[in-house]
Image (cartoon, rainbow, N blue to C red):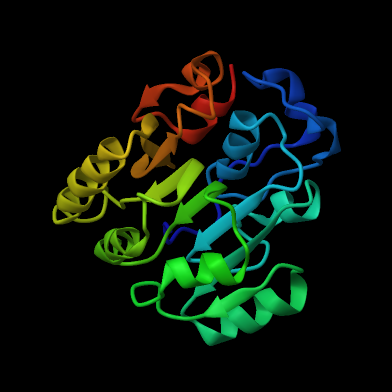
Length: 226
């Protein structure tokens, strides 16, 4: 996650007519919470799906820059989050309904975690966002992508911050491509810094939806809005 002092833009209800795609129950969102509209991207891809399921690798705060808060709070999603910082885990679990587990995302047995939570083989949203970026790649490699699929994925590469992260970018894209995911928004920018890739499962999200967001090196506001 970019270490900036919240210069980010947020969606507000007054921005409704700017949206490229309006999804079910959009009018119930007063504002979003993600750093770069990841929550709005997920809901756009899945037409405001209710009672979805997420896996959040790298939870951080319960509200600020959270990709899952409005999914849980407004759309009734369940899910599990991972966070290595115990203080952040305690805050998350104090304020949120869905649980956050204090654990190193690189050593978690994801298959066991999914089975313990009775997750289906098609999970709606996967976020991977831990630092440094090679740890995000290592966490990705721990997930059984042959057995479990994810309808929408946001994967942080932090390509802006370190030339070594080009390896993370290349390897992660190869992994997702091998498993049939569509890279919709590559090198998503926040405040001019490219740092994340957004994918969909084309078996779930049809081209008539994702093509509206297809881009490379766009500022996040230019992905969401007309």
